Length: 408
Image (cartoon, rainbow, N blue to C red; front, side):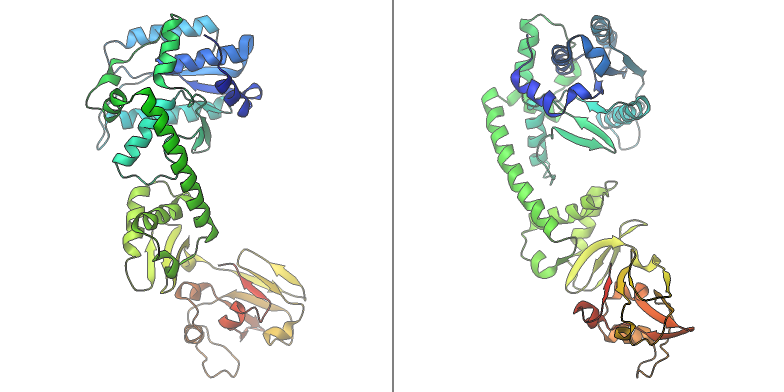
């Protein structure tokens, strides 16, 4: 057995020679194969770049055999091992697979951070890639990427899958032909597992056909998400209502993903989709930080504007910028001001303007100007000597007739 050109290129693509990784290791054929490929790549420097993490779940009567094989390879390659023993206790609404997945990735992340690794390597292969795609389709999932990515992230931990170019059968055949032992977990043959039945039915020819199909579908997805990015978070209903239902749902999830809202993603996506069916303006609170704002014309996700409070004092002419607005006070007459200093703060309930405008109540004046409801509480007012002397016309801001740009 030798290091294939494709896998070497993948290792080089991620600059393995200049990094140190933790390898998720089970003693099964996939992780054994990846460890061998890494040993060919690093030669006598393997232990300087790779350590393994093995978790004994004590979930079958054969785990002692599995663990013995793992330590045989540790001894053979002289690499460091991080070993953990854990017993599964059924948690509410969690099966073993879900619990074990969460447990191991949390452990991997902890070790990677504490020990200074550059990321985690997993031995997912081409068959896993195809199985994932088939399950995504069967479950009606709307992922941002079909199948498995070569690299993604678990929280801040880089997770690299460098052997997606080889199928399960191909790597197992290589191990068998070279009489390299591995542990074949009989729980992977459980007919009640969705992946088990998919794997049994897949031929090598079908796997290749699926890979081409996944590649094409991901190209289309990339184009779709590039389109979503072009909307810059705010989307008009004129555009949204031209989407088919699938695209509408994808955009709802895109809003969550672009705001890094992962906890409760499925539920939030459905809530947004249902909320957008309504015909009235309003808000949908997703958490303490994020609100979905809907007007009659557009919608977007943003922070809670009602919590915004600011106050800035300007003593001399100039151009100023902060997180709430950019303003050019070089010529203060454009804001009907005669003198500086001026305080610019957000609107407060009960504010009244001190000039001779017919409407003294600022909230009513803003509503009359068509200021969106979500901007009322953070709209800027100009205060000179304790009195509100200027409240910019919203249309003048939109038409850039005054040198003030709001960052909301």
